[in-house]
Amino acid sequence: MRTRSLRHLTAVAALALTTIAAAACTAAPRVRPSTAESTSTARGTASPTATPSTTAAPPTSVPHRVTTPRTVAARAPVPPRPTVRPARCLGAVTYTIDTAKKAPPRTRLCIAVGGVVEVRNLGPEGLVVSPGHKVSCYYEAAVHPCRLIQTGTVTFTISRPNGNQVVTVFVAKASSPPRPAPACLGAKTVFTLDAVTSQADWPAICMKLGAVVRFTQLGPEGLSVSPADAVSCSYEAAVHPCRLVKPGTVTFTVAGPHPRTLTVVAVR
Image 1 (tube, one colour):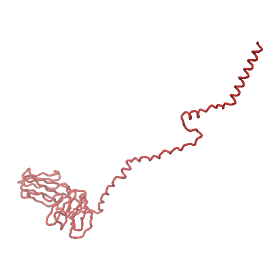
Image 2 (image 1 turned 120 degrees about the horizontal axis):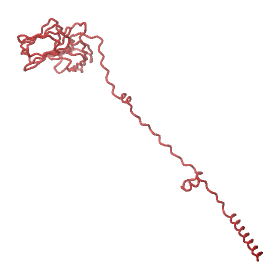
Image 3 (image 1 turned 135 degrees about the vertical axis):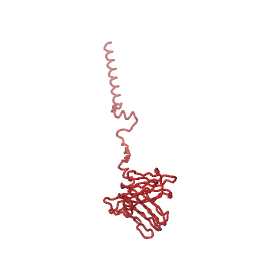
Image 4 (image 1 turned 90 degrees about the horizontal axis):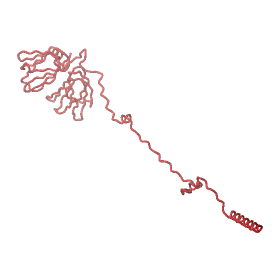
């Protein structure tokens, strides 16, 4: 009995080994994929051996130009060049411009304070002066006399049939030693004004130091002077004599129902 059983087990074992061998020969070998292949397959992407896709280059960025203060200054409008003062400066003279005669469209002059620019043969509306506070102008019989009463630059624009004429005048300080001043009254002059009969401002005048401005028919409180230390005034019997003692521009103001002024340029 034992011998038969042993033979039976041996036969079964041999049959099992034969079956396993046959299965091993017919089945395809299993290869474990690499980690990269497993990840690619799991995500459904292309295999590393596939043709690589073309990657588009990033767009070229254009840098933003920042405007610096220097750039802004360069773009700002260039201010006009200042007018050059003439090398030669006249004293307190009377300079006449006759519009009946030909003249260059632009003229530059230098005249000392107290001088006069006189424009002739011109209607009442044919002259513009800027700035107006540096001159004292009036009009009579086609003549515009303009007294220069403050230093600085004054522009005269004259209307002519063939176009405007521009005269730029540099009003200089009175020179020391003084130049000839034919547009000014002498040091011994006594200039008298009636404070009652006149109702308009008097044209400005130029006088040398020592000259006297005399106001008549005016009460003791009827006159004021600015600057006060530029003159030496007295009062008697409705008369105010005022002697010029310092160079400069002096304003006399007469009080009353019709207040009016007189501007005097005092020079040495």
